[in-house]
Amino acid sequence: QVQLVESGGGLVQAGGSLRLSCAASGRTFSNYAMGWFRQAPGKEREFVARISRTGGRTFYADSVKGRFTISRDNRKNTVSLQMNSLKPEDTAVYYCAADPLSRSAYSAGSYDYWGQGTQVTVSS
Image (tube, rainbow, N blue to C red):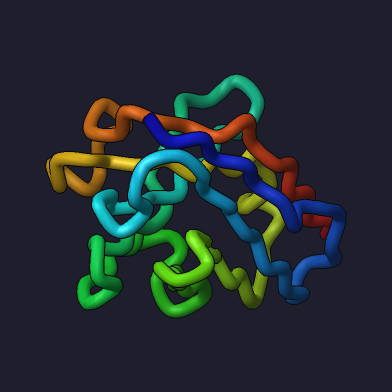
């Protein structure tokens, strides 16, 4: 099992930037593909970004492509999400998640372990 703890959320104006971090503990971090999802009030949880076990492959939702960057440091057991040019529609609780089997990047069901989430609020 792996435990995940997100940090870095907050309130930012539109056009601003935030960097989310997710610290992992437990099993070997490099065994997991890692993803970020978000959930806005009244909406379903949606895929944001994913990074492969080695960091060599990344995937993004169309809505964040070119603005967000996912990265990982397997020595420090962390995965990060750099969010630039933030928009009010990016407001949500952001979750990091771990997939031990390298399944579909975009489906929340592929991820077995989840953090508690961190709130991101973008004001207009």
